[in-house]
Image (cartoon, rainbow, N blue to C red; front, side, top):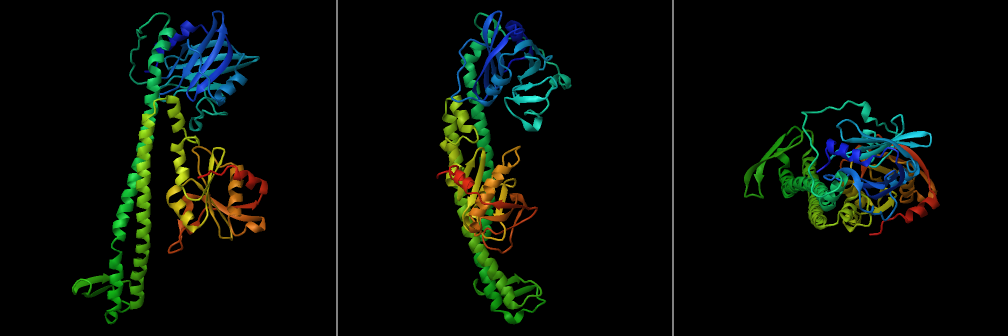
Length: 473
């Protein structure tokens, strides 16, 4: 239930913002901002809401709720825009983008309020269109510090024209008062439903991936369940040495495990009878070992699937939009729902700012982390020339790995290796997708490609700091 362009024009006409001075910016949540302005008609509070299904911009007649901690975008506005005088406040055609021109000293800055339901944002630029900051940073679209945004210079593609009118709303007073009263009654519910829909979307994605993974694992389990046949083939080959030569492709013999019925067993040319039998025994041992691992992975997958469904139920039962947002927000370490991944993941976990570093302490943990807890664009580090832990840096969308985080992970890789007493060492690193499992190698052994080298001098001060970043389980 967003505002249409005619309603936005009505709101701007009533507000008469030209000549007002911006006194303060208050950001009460991730999607809600209030600008306090003062002009000829006294003080006004301008509400900007970017919540899906409740995107709007109007004067509000309620006190702006304060956040429990200062939020980034409000701090930026208070340092760069406050005390500026509004020279112009207009809508760009019928595109639902409000441009507020602000004079701050000798400089001119522009606040763009984009009131699109699925891409709402507040972007501040200088006169050249260079983005100074954005309420919602979207690097891929240039909506970040240093990007470029000048919508008035870009052509807009429109479909069939739709006629819009200013809605007849209940109540008295100005259109701003009516809109504020309407959203006071319904806005919280709309925002809550949007957050619940986001929770459903995330959970359904996780559930779909887990179910697909379980389906593959169960197919592999069925394949490994026939492991006993491989051992039987080896035994039959050994019992029929005289029928096999180096050129044999098939062995036709009696299956003494099935009452003497005829059986055909495929052979590899160029191998002796004993080597043919050993090949089947080797496949048998691998299948037996793999069956146990697959069953374990299925059990873990089923538990994870149940946990996701349980988490979704808990999220959908939450009635407070602010609490629900905190539970959904990635990186909220106070939420037990979001900490469950850390609790069940093997190895050591470190939280360095917004970055997660994981350390596998032995071959089994290294292997489990590779199989189930890291993805293709995560970074893998390992000490060169020494056995030791695999260290992973979890990738963050749209971010490159900072040097300081790389040094943190590198220190851990050397510290948790056989070369720790040397005080320094070389390591190599690459993305997980460039690792290849060693054929018939021990558990967890991988061969890296496209790797890079890094020399690390172990810093005791850095390791001490890292101890405070360790996630307790």
